[in-house]
Image 1 (cartoon, helix red, strand yellow):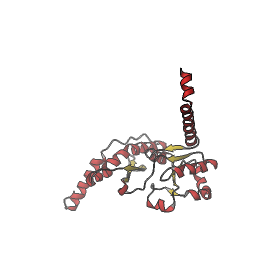
Image 2 (image 1 turned 180 degrees about the vertical axis):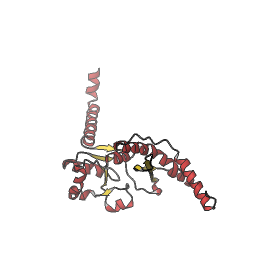
Image 3 (image 1 turned 90 degrees about the horizontal axis):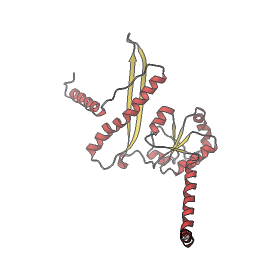
Image 4 (image 1 turned 135 degrees about the vertical axis):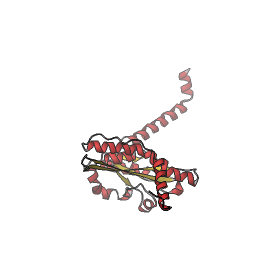
Length: 235
């Protein structure tokens, strides 16, 4: 019965085989040579491994909006800039390629692979300019830890800048302002906390664990102090 069904409907099974083959080829083409990193993983890759972000959009498109600290090398100019990128390869720094749609980034990754760049990533997802009108916001959190000896001498100073890109849409202006200034930095804080601990440990100093904090409370306290200063009642 099964053989008869297959024989009668052979064209359906032929189409199924073709579709499966196309899926397998596309999966191999996408995954064989290039790894992907998400927007959430990108800050960790930059902070921990010194990753370099290369935006291969055209210059005009790059000027409209790009990831902070990204280097602009249009795809058509990539071959002529390989020597410029070799210093990152020699230092074993990951290279993350990005563009607006992801298509050019995949082609650029293939070029770098052919030229012996092994630690290459593409940024997953469609990228949009950092523009409030598009609901794309960047949040940065800066933290400095200063340790002193019993004599008051500075033992070490550790500073970390943690940044993230957030998509915030459908909120009124007041709520949006609260999220950008309070909620987004709070999301970044655990990553910053981990990075600071690792930096201090790698420096050979005793383990240090930054305690949990409320960014919203710190922000409100800061504004309260500024308000008192403006009214002439600051301590």
